[in-house]
Length: 542
Image 1 (cartoon, helix red, strand yellow):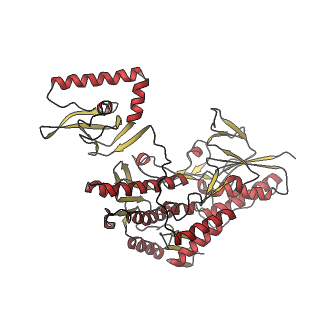
Image 2 (spheres, helix red, strand yellow):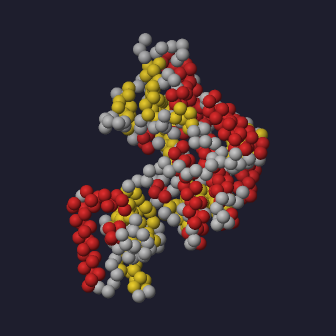
Image 3 (cartoon, one colour):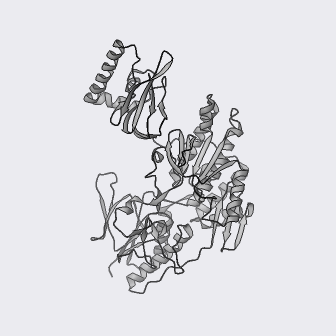
C-alpha cells in the first residue's frame, strides 16, 4: 500500500494535537507519513503566557519541545512560502541556503492560527507591544523592568509620569489577563525603587465594549472582573477604541491621547498572512470548512482551529478556543484516516465545557457547563488545576508544579534578559503637533520623511521661529549625527507623519563604506555651513 503523506501547517493547539492523534492512530498501520511545519521547534501553552510576565513561572515552563511531543512526526522548522494545490506541494522558505524547499502531500491540514494584525492602525506596528507568542511575553517583561528602572532615576515629572503609565488595549481574555499580570508585576517592581510612589503608577485597560469580557462571560462575572481590576488599581477605559500609536502616546478614536512608553495591544487579530495568498474560500477572515473540517472546494485540504470557520450542528460557528481546537484536532485526524480508508466522514460536534479567565494573583472567574459560576480564589485554584492537567508532557507538569510551589516561598527575580535585537533601520509614526526631537537633544539618528510633513523650529534670541517646512522624501537630523553636536533645531509634525529612522552607528557605517552616500551628506553639510556663515540664523539640523 502506498504511503499517505499528511502535512500539517502550524504548531499551535490545533496542529500539534492533530499530529499527536494521527501518531496514535498510525501505531497499528504503516501507510501514514506525518509532517508538521512550524516557525518554532516548540509548542506554547498559551493560557500560561501571562504568568511569564510576572515571573510566576519560568520562561520554558509554558513550552514543550515538538520532538518530545511528536517522536514519529517529521518536523520542518520553517516558514511557509506558499502552496501549489494543483501539484499538492507546500513551498517552504529557505533555511541556511537561499533555496526553497518543496514538500509533497496527499492531505494538507491548515492550522496556522491567527496573528495580531496592526494594518490600518498607524504606528501600532512600530510602537505597540504584541502579546501573542513566547517572544512577545519575554520582550514585554524585559520592557517593564527597563521602564521601572528608568522611572526610578528620571527627574522630569512629565517623563516620569509617561514611564509609569501602562496602557493595554483589548478587554477580552488575552487583554485582561495580560493587564492584570502587568499591574501585579510593575507594582511589585516599584517597591524596590525608593523614588517611585505607588500612587504614581497608572495601569489602564482600554476596551471598545461596555464591559470587559462582555463577549466571554455573563454580566455578573464581567462586572465582578471589573470590580477586581479596579480594586487592584487598574483604571478601565470602556467604550474606547485604540486608533494609533506614537513613540510617546496611545491615540484613541475620540481624539484622546495618553502619554505612555508602554502600550500593549491584543487586538485586532486576523488569520496568518500566509493563508491569504492561498486562494482558499474565506469568510469573516477565516477559511470556510464543512462539518467534516474539509475546506470548501478542496478534496484533500482540511482546516481547523482559529483560522477556520467551523460550523456547529446546532447553528453558529465554533469559537476560537483551545478546547475546541483540541477536539477538532482529534476529530479531523479520525476523518483523514476514514478518507484514506474510503469510509464515510463524521460531522464535528462539541459543546463547550466552560470558560475561565485569570485576574491576577489569586483571582479568576469561571463558568462551567453554562450553569456553574465561580469567582475569586476558588476559580483561581480551578484555573491553575485544569491548566496544569491539560499541559502536555509529565515533565512539563512537574516543572510547572515546582514553579508554582516556589512562587509561594521565594520572590521572583527581576532580571532583564536583553535578547531582542534592535533593528538597524526602523520606522516611527507621529501624530499632529508631536515633536520628533527638541533643540539641544542628542543627535542619535537620521530621519527620512516617508509620509506627511514636519516643521523645523529654532529658538532665535529666545523666540521660537519656524525656519523651514520639510515634505515627504526629505531628510533631517544628519548634522548632529555627523558632528557630535546637539540638535540645532526642534522638529514638530504638521500632520500624521511616518518616518524612516537610521541609527547613528548604521548611518556612520553607510557613510564610511558608500562614497556616493557620504559625498551627498557632506555636500548638504557644506551648504549648511555656508548658510550659517552668511546668516545670523542658526544652522538648521536637517
